[in-house]
Structure formats: C-alpha cells, structure tokens
Amino acid sequence: MKKITLLLLGIAGIGLVVGIAKAATYQSDPGACGATTWLNCSNAFLSDDVWAEGVAPATGIWKNYDFGLPASFSTPTVEVGVEAHQKKVGARCTTINMNIAVSRNGGQSFGPNHQLSFNCSDTLTWVDVTSDFGSGSWTFSQLSSNSFQVRADCVLGGTCELDWLPVRVTI
Image 1: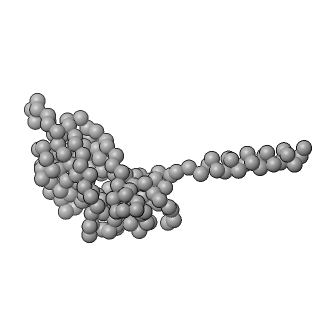
Image 2: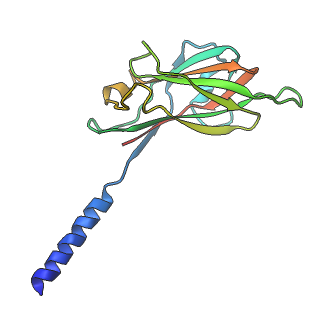
Image 3: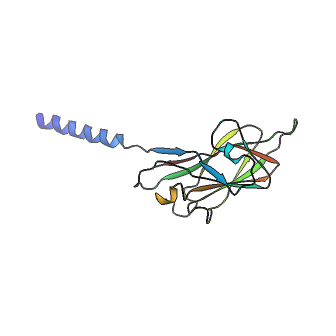
C-alpha cells in the first residue's frame, strides 16, 4: 500500500512540476527614436494619450527596447504593439494606413511591412513579427537593445498619431 501511495504522490508531483512550466512574457517600451520625420517621436514611448505625429509620408525608427530576457531561450513569439489613430480634421475622420517593420541587426535591414489601418478611435493592435525573417527563430543578440528596432511609416490618409509602440516577447 505504501508503494502505491508513494507512486501516486510521485506521479502527482511530476504533474505539478509540468504544470508550473508556463510561458513568460517580457514587454518593453522604446527608449529612443531617430531617423524620423515624425514630430515628437518620444511621445510614442508610453501609452498616455500624448502622441507622436506623422504626416504621410512620415517614417521613423524606435529602438533601445530592453526586455530583460534570460540569455538562453527557445522559439520566442515576438509582437509589436501599435496604439494609434487618425487625427480628426474638424468633424471629418478618414482611415489612415501605417506600415510597421522590424530589424534585428541594428537597422541595417528590415523585415516585411505589416500594413495597419486606423480610424479616429485610439486602438492598440498587436502585430506578430515572429516569422518575418523565415524560420521564426530569434536569438538573445537579435533582441538586444542594440539590434532590435521598429520602423513605423505613416503612408496614406493624412496625419497619423502614434501613442505607443511597445514590443513583447513570449518565451
């Protein structure tokens, strides 16, 4: 009877250990912006209803994301959050389009554009960029504050107002 009880306790313990292993999410706001035609680009560092403004065609780079990731991980999911809206002109509100792309080599090259559309309501949209460079594998170095960058382009429709540009990594 003791052996059966110990065996059952051991199996239950293994189940608890397996159940504890959950995904961890690390989120960061940009720490710097540059190479930009957006006005007040640093206003996109926080979700605070104070906006960076880009008149189409505006482009800008946000960088210095500090995720605090462990040095070793496998197969992360990488997502860029875009909180933005179209600046209202009088009573008129049209849809604006933005492109978001990421770099993992310090801005030497960027992945494909992800086109987003916004109206006059401030909306947070998450864009999965995990597979932008093929297999979806990312390294610690590629997600470092020196390597990872986000490019945001206001491409059509008037004035884009960008409130926040966070990035989250789930491992």
